Amino acid sequence: MADSKIRQIANAIKTKIQLSEGGAYSSQTLANAIVIGAVIEPPFVPYASIVFAQSSSDFGQTLGRYRITATFEIYLFIGGTSVSDRTLNAMDLAADVIDALTADRQLGIPSVVDDIKCAFTAEDGDRYGIEGIGIGYVQIEVYYQTDTGS
Image (spheres, rainbow, N blue to C red):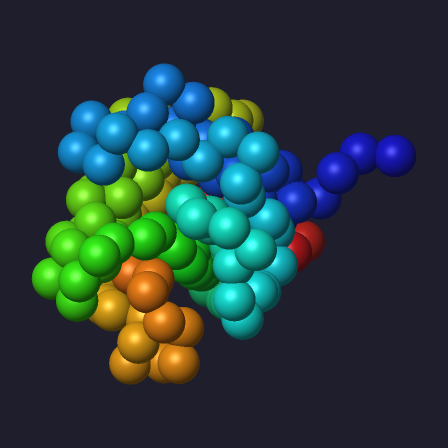
């Protein structure tokens, strides 16, 4: 059985953000530290959670084709000794993840993905009751086309 396009995209995002060589800004790796699904508190840091937020369809360029926008959210968790360190570390890790994603805007699956667009922010986890952890948030909009709308 073949994987759905949305599953292929989620797995491609996971592969792209592993930062197995360490990120250029954060020097962190997320290899073996990424889960697809929501987590409230990370089991360790650095850690990443990829959440599928929604998928919306619009009419495609031809009859019977749909243009899909799938939205994913990545929550990045990283440590730091102070509010400033945690926030800045989360910013750096988010920047590394964006660089990894946009290095190939088809996520390595050009037969599926047309393009992506990213936005990000970073905050101190203390604000949300996750003490001693910075939280980076990356939103990814993935554009692709289908015959079925899924």
